[in-house]
Length: 538
Image (cartoon, rainbow, N blue to C red; front, top):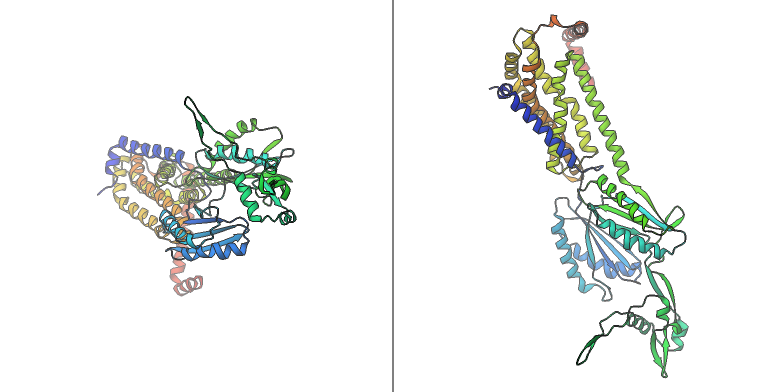
């Protein structure tokens, strides 16, 4: 059975199949996300609990321990770590790689519900959690600062305006804030004044909380009209807090300013970020899984000039880190290496075949195999990253092997006097299944990588699939396009019809072959020495 017979007889069909392969590959290349490494999702969930005022020991014993006891009953947890600081606890749960992150999230939610009765009653809100990939670093850092405005005013521009606008961009998962400077009124109680008036700190806390509420106050309904009552219950600055009444003593009101000092300050004055010796609000932008890092950063850079136009002149916005620059440089470097490798392969083919027409035919297998692989990568949802491009670079050296074997066998029949069409049919029939076995055996070398477990297996899975796809496509091209082109474009003739370069290089190859034949005979005559050198090499 001749695998190439139908493709030799139908050149138009063969050309259209190759054209379709190239078209799908070009389309796949345009849709491939660009990243530095393949997407590896680690099933990781982070749990957050806040209890303002509690010291780290209290957070560890009364908050972290009850939650950890419940989380330890969940199946599939590889690692659990907790970090308790002043007023907050973070517990990180890392599950086995084969565990579904959605199923793990449901188990975590159930464990939090079971542990709620053992947690302090004073928690301002229940524990929260979110799915997290610790390997996914931010794609961009931006710092907003000002030498004249207050940090709280700069924070308003950064968190309220810029962060929200960036969060709406397609491909942006979330925007983290470092050095947050949210405005807050801080109340510093005077212990001596409270003791003199016999007012407890709890009474002061309740009075402050009761004074700063924004509740519905109802309406006045008359026979002909209705009036909604509106009272400003929300206090916005320290001066408004000063006049609030804490309690009454001897018929006189005791106001907040009598027993405490109110300050226009920040929610957390101890967390700050700095950029170029200036206090700044730093925004960390995270991408959505599978999104194109380069495309997302380009979109962000397009909206920044418009946003900067609406900022006061005293506010500066700087891009501290742009991950896309590193990705662009590394991808460009690998692409250059791929082109150089392709040029060297074509050059080596020409040196040994010594004819332009014979060099072009197997050389076509290289771009078609590489471009066609992009279609498969897009179908599998892979990235255009360093590992996938490395797989293509490594495959450059052997994707043309099948085509060269097919070409050499057909040329051998042509030099024996047969017509190109008959030589293509006979040569393809002789070597077709050999090329099939070569392709399958070469692809089988990388199959064990597909079944590797753990993080390394996840990382190299895309590499193995990419290189196997390239090998299979090159084998398909070798038994379809190569014999068809040989039957149409190779000319009849014997080796004596070639030019000077052919005969000069042929004499050089014959000299090398003669030296090899001489060394082979010597090794056969000195068997013990040859076997001894083999043992030494092992």
